[in-house]
Length: 308
Image (cartoon, helix red, strand yellow):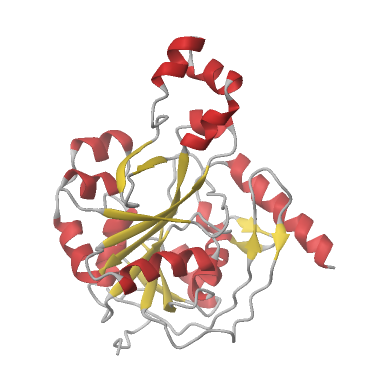
């Protein structure tokens, strides 16, 4: 059982009671958004994981991002609801160092925990919360993924549930536009034949050397050989860990590649940890810029009109 922790913002471990308010929206990046509401009562007993959602107020590209509104509701609440919609998740806790985010989450009836402000990454923030939990599996749902599919979470959790040797899992989805290959905000992943990640990068990987040589640049290669897109996959903002491994991971120093790319998963790759990569159930849109936010707002608004 998970211990009850007091909900005072001045406490080191404030948690509050939550109630699920899930809503599910399936999106694609190039086709129309499809709305499929989730029945919050349709959850089985296989709730073996706790979701922790790291959320910072400070952001160089989009300050105050967790509290920006989508259809009148703060972004962070969209993420929380979608995490709670996953059949494998028993609880969802927002981990933040900002009282404004804490108050927004708890006043809506969800759980939140105040954390230190000096964490190097979201994973380190999640680990601080995990240290107070009694559960085997921890899900790190990125706080800027308001449209993440709950089934995607279940797929990643299932990899750890069915294979005791998997310590960490994540998800990926196809890249459908050349602009995403070139965008450093879109993290690319290369996966081996057994479904484990071999590398992550903000640069285009795997590098299509032959096509680039033939066409003179990667932009020209992608334009002249559209099939090249099938060789790229986008990393989705989700991690699942065994709790004991996560606590060890957080104690490791950052490696050079992690600092250079600002990708904490490279800390695990550098130490030889095998990261299982599963296909996302549906594409999602991570909100990193105002353009991303407006895109999500437009999709949700359109689906709301269709539903009415």
